[in-house]
Length: 93
Image (spheres, rainbow, N blue to C red):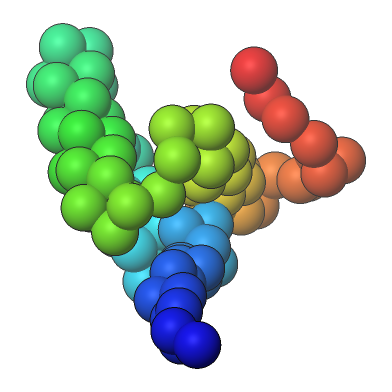
């Protein structure tokens, strides 16, 4: 009888939207830059996060969910910084 071992594992990644320090850092930066500079910065942030999650082996669908949740968290933080009311929880896209 031959023993077969299964070495597959499920990778659990701490949700990007719960990385409060990262969310606040990005929101602070976006608060002081505008226009093309803000767009370039945001694309760089998303590309870096995408690359990190891909390196960990997350499927594309899960990466997209994480990136949208991070986007929502940054938007909520910007609203919070300005003392605005936070919208109901949900997607902003």
